[in-house]
Image 1: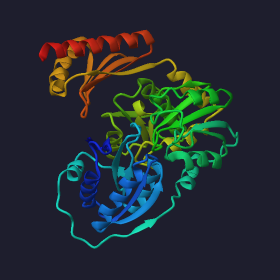
Image 2: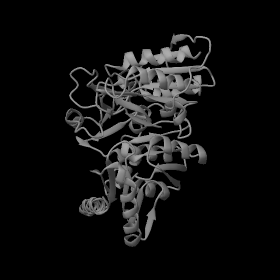
Image 3: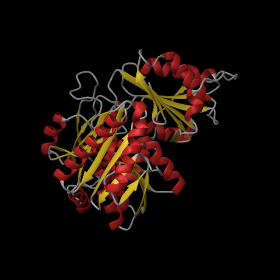
Image 4: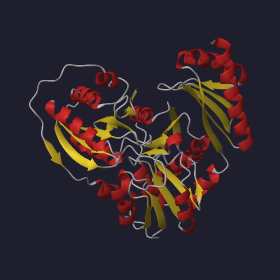
Length: 432
């Protein structure tokens, strides 16, 4: 089971069961000041039983529950601003046998101070029983106001991946003026996996050849991958296109995770904006956004564009509409051409978690000798030159160390990753 600010996730029936759901939701109840909570789930087969258990725990603690049923994560985040709290039953892009819960307070995910209060055992709160009510969301209408009308009526293919975005993403795109073809609307007989960032998206690539663009969503609708002329784009491109639209709207203050492409930072600065870097992770990006009153940003590794004025989460559905509004414009081609000169590789190596800190310390010493700039905000990032960098980070939940790198030279990027993986392995062999 993984217990992080990004959510509690596990293989249902193995390391995550209904007893866990009851306890975590019971504990979460103590953080809900409004005594109101929205709840929704993605399309996983175990979603209903977990959702019913979560609702029971919340109502037992005097919380009134407002049920959105099968709904994308961004919609639940949006509605939680109105009600004060939210619960998302999903494990995002994890395999189908996984499930989990994500907790929302006043429109944002929980932070590192709130997580222990949810996962630590507490006594049940004595209170009157809460009620349940089914509600509908005004998300599509509110997203339309941000996007505006698209007069060019672009031809778009949307790969739902059998997820919760099926009633929202196509309808939003149609409402703003797009002509939409839908793939994999249902989970049964879906031709791809739940994570579009790792899947080859072969059907979408083929279908998009004669369309202007293709969009692929994960099961809960917060991740978005772009396919252009049959070619799957990197997650950083999704974020880059969202950033380009933000600049077009006049936004100047951005937060990017430390592993996001340097090309996006350069593009922002060349267009009069300013950038701050956060630790990796959606919650960390949003936390720094709130502290610095930043207007937009996100996390390149997950294709996660975030627009705080609308939602404190990765916004795959809204982003698809914002990107569609740029199709056929010089801004769209500009960011694709700009980012096309950069290459990112993200890899990992199996390392016993008991040795993670010692390996990181060993690598830090080597990086400090080798690179002119070393950043220890989150793991260790070595800046090689203005176009190249490498980052190593330990996993908090697995026996792995992650290695990410970027360069404007593809072969150089491959060599950086290979050299760093060898360095991690040699350090591990030396100290264990």
